[in-house]
Length: 223
Image (cartoon, rainbow, N blue to C red; front, side, top):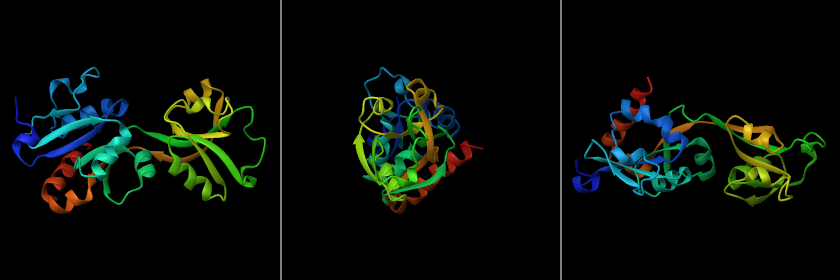
């Protein structure tokens, strides 16, 4: 078994998101020459940190939003996360040098189909929004002169309008099928997003050759 990055001394940590994006990322990792331990892709594995074929690189598997936190605070030096996470997290401790073009989706405003278009959003002064993106939602509506009262949910946003929790939701949309199944329609796209390679800015300054090397390997893996 290869040494872990910790055992090797001063290895790097690559933070990767659980779920759909990780599956899309598999061929990119392979082309970049990264081969994690066999149980890395086992959803039932309780391990969160895995050695790779490179003794100077370990990978950790965490929730998508946590990737940005680990990288920003230096727990991991590099990572992969969605543009939506970067928009919400909004920190100067993260540099995102490479768009991986994976996980294409959008952050959108949606509301019940039965109420959509019944009034003019430009005349709103206040709106209640259910979302897991409070910062994105507040910035979006503030730019339109609307005060957003945020109901912070981590899931099942689509239920909020029908249960009276909010007028609209701000959520990540891929196909729109979940919205449709719950009687909602997309009324505005805030941003189109994809997954990005991110790095810790301090690590980029203190270990420039290593970080630049990995950026180059990921870039080559996309061609």
